[in-house]
Picture 1 (cartoon, one colour):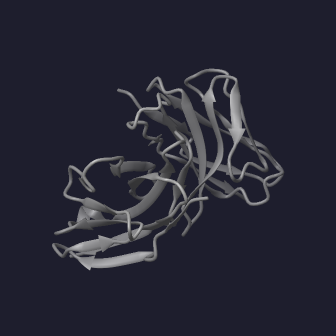
Picture 2 (cartoon, rainbow over the protein chains, first blue to last red):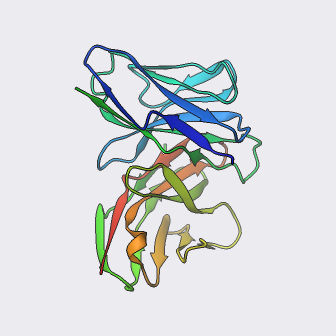
Picture 3 (cartoon, helix red, strand yellow):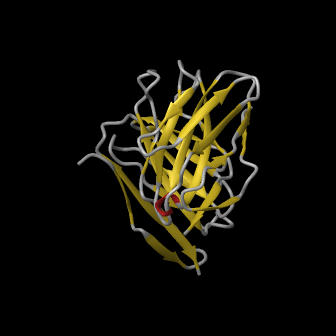
Length: 115
Length: 114
């Protein structure tokens, strides 16, 4: 069963702590993405990666870090430098064949709450 | 730069009534257009997309959207909604020369009442 998994579903963190959100896909997609969703707002791109060992900042990368050591995995670390980390985090993936059919598919999300 | 506007933050309708969720975009280059649906505490699911060809695109669950280039719109419609359609709907665009960057609207919450 192909898809994207994110864990955990809910995550609580104390202020000043770093926390890592997991994202795994078995769709054989080259590109992976991290978005942040806040109430009443659309999704905003944090980081994306089109190939292993390479990634680029999105629109709101400050306070976040990523790694892409394997094609299937794209973990996101929310650092203590992120001033307002409470949000719903969504991971996505897509092929990058350049075909019109390249579509981003989303995981179920992780809800992070900073206490 | 691209932007997407969904003017209605919430649309309440009665079951079996028709509904239209509005989406307008701004872009200096040609774009592809998407509608995603999000059920509570879940990720986004692709509902339908316009890439090329016929300007009217349909989904398997009765939704349709029409690309209007002159009005830069991609409104989502359904002639008769069900309780199960209650969800948040996001319109998004992607530049034709880019495979990665989706620009999302702020979303419209569709609330279907019995």
